[in-house]
Image (tube, rainbow, N blue to C red; front, side, top):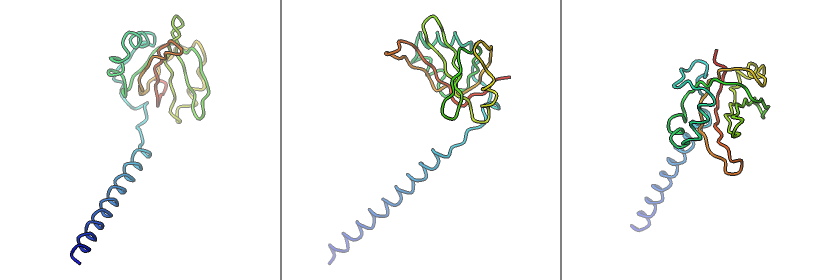
Length: 153
């Protein structure tokens, strides 16, 4: 009889622990998928750089550049090379035509209208959160991505 009580107590403890773990997991899941970011327009840029200089910095050492720029608000000044419509956003590209390396900017929903006014050749200043860069072995180019972007005026 004492063995059954001990087993019952352990089963209860395991069930309680599983409920606690499930509650913590559900809370973390809810937090991550409902996180809201401040408008990038109101954020202060950590760095202000020229597009070609940024591309060359990543080409020279993308590991060091990722440590410096990733998850930072960065203002990039340069010329629009092309625009492309994607699912629910507009992507703006600045391309280094000598090597094909590029920066791609995805605009925040509330700033899509101003992004739609841009065209190839426009000189712009774009502020966004740098997601980092990587070298594509297939394309043999460096690419740098930005999210939550806005025109910097």
